[in-house]
Length: 272
Ligand SMILES: C[S@@+](CC[C@H](N)C(=O)[O-])C[C@H]1O[C@@H](n2cnc3c(N)ncnc32)[C@H](O)[C@@H]1O
Image (cartoon, rainbow, N blue to C red; front, side, top):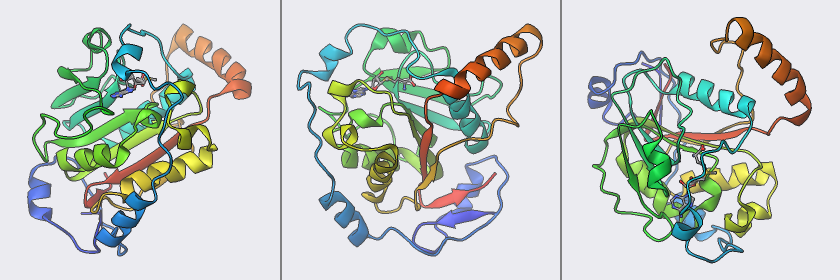
């Protein structure tokens, strides 16, 4: 069984095996985020003010049935989910909207959505249920049982969190041991609603910031950062769809949205 373990030892591995269906290989990771390191990371969180200080609920009041990044970016998100989320997993799509970017051929035991706009979430065909909550006003005490998800996802939205340390602690709480959290982002944003530390940073600095969010919580494995996902093994469209996609890709080589992902696991990393 391959695993990376926060704390340098394997925690609750038997109960973990019984609650998951995927196949694993083992790698033990010896350096752990300690409580000291988590306190240090929390103490050093940078400036989180926004230019638009108005109510977030009001800002997201009208449904936006659009995609916020280009198709290649979203294909990478989907392929990353294909690689990291096992079939049958329980999934929480945090800060979601009318699309979740999950691989269409995959089946999960449940997909719960969270967001700011009920009309957007009601249009999202991947969701079994959803809830609306302003995570800046109410970052913690979500009405979700602890250790109930195999994967928590957050796509192109982390920049809007003003109390990330509390939200990441909740993510940790609801993840099962071995569960994965995948945060993806690009350089597009609602500028006035993003925190100052995000607005003032480069792509590299934003990756460091999201890593710091994970390090604020004792027990997350060392965060991994990716700036690309290999699409060569992703299912390819056939016929006319393939011709259109190749034509679009030629155009996008000049214009593509940059891709970043930061990934961490609760206690133990499972490779499947
Ligand atoms: C750019 S959209 C991304 C939506 C979706 N994840 C996607 O990939 O298309 C930003 C999302 O962040 C979420 N969001 C922004 N501010 C929030 C807040 N204060 N509390 C909770 N969610 C928030 C909303 O769900 C909003 O739809």
